[in-house]
Amino acid sequence: MTTELRKRVVDSPKVWTVLLTNTKYLTGLLLLDYSLKRVKTKYPLVVLYTDTLEPAGHAALDRRRIPKMRIEYLLPKASKDFSNTPRFYDCWSKLQPFSLIEYERVVQLDADMLVLQNMDELMDVPLADNIFAASHACVCNPLKIPFYPADWIPSNCGFTHQHSNPDAAQTEGAPSTTGIGQCNGGLQVVSPSLANYELITAALLDPKKTDEYGFADQTLISDVFAGRWRPLPYVYNALKTLRWCHKEIWRDEEVKNVHYILSPKPWEDRGIEEPTHKWWWDMNDKRLADESAAGIEADGF
Image (tube, rainbow, N blue to C red; front, side, top):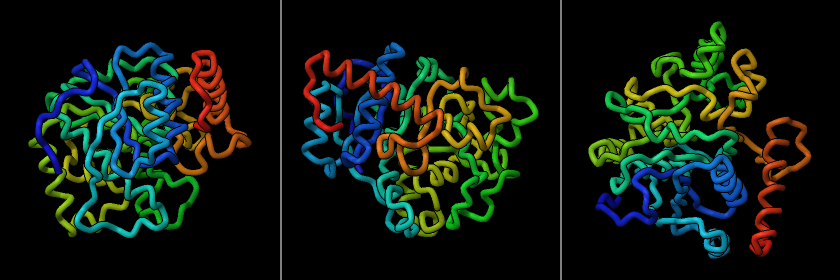
């Protein structure tokens, strides 16, 4: 697990980052990059890739001149069996931004996100008394997924506690200790620190901890930094299920960044009759048209 100061791959002290371990999420990542540029962000998106990324993935990124940097693939010494959700094995590597001390601020995003409004203000969110900032995980388990924890119920959800004040929910998150106090790892605002990264790697080496972490990276940081993360409002990490699971607070016009959790992903099935998926496809059609006009050869992504 490397922690040395590396050379920046972009000329910016503040960056968006996204993990890419294979081409399964590449189409989503390309739209994420396009949507960030479309809302005129001042900051570059850097792809954090592992040695598992296929040559076709590298070629697609290079063709679009998206900056990238290699990171080590993180895995704990032992973990829960994620055969039901094998993508969680990749998720541990989303903890690497805590180690990127060559940057002042890193905002880690998931590849299955769509940015609808500029959110550059995240680069300046104060973290003086907090390790990182994130939105709550929705622990309602509205789809009744059988292997989810028994305490994942609406009464333990941070968003449920905001139903009585939807106006406030647009600009602030419930306290980080609300309910079971777990964040969603899809968006993390981080000021990299070797001291904090060492706390993370120590937890990765402790089977007594990682054997109990049911949602990989987000469970780990919610545990290691319990009560020490700054809650963000849902608008920065608007889980698509919140639109109907927490309709009391969701407002289409306020959402800055949609997170397409669960399967299928939008690029896997265009026939899903859901407004948020239509938003994704409308934007992706624009991306492909703009790429064609720019002379970027179609490559299936």
